[in-house]
Length: 170
Image (cartoon, rainbow, N blue to C red):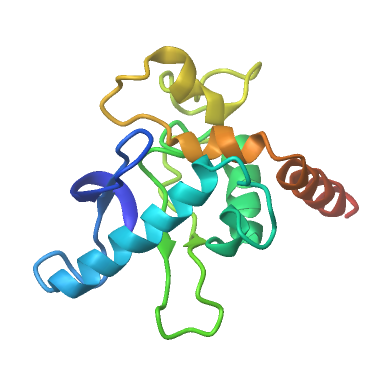
């Protein structure tokens, strides 16, 4: 599943729209659609709660934080104008023991590394994730509130910092 323009949307926050990838939209069952909606609803509900940063009951219970950190880093470094709102894949295997939403794989890099003159991709003086919040909250494809909320968590930010320091060692 990826952030996209049709098929389904979240129930909270910015009404982020999803595009089913696998199973294909014509093959996905109502049970599968409901499962996906419910899983993202639980994640968003935890993220919007006062205890969102609690490692046991907060957002971390529903997402693979490492994959969100990795995607954050590559999207910020590459200045992807579609990041956080269009070009983002997610998957979750309901039969997997891990049972968390994973952010990835990364893709759609034709406009990155300052090759776009729109969507914040041309700017070097700001965070890419915040672009969607700064321009217009009623944008056709807004940046999800998830990222603003994740960045409010000092533990999530520390994971980003640790990853960056680790990656820069070599």
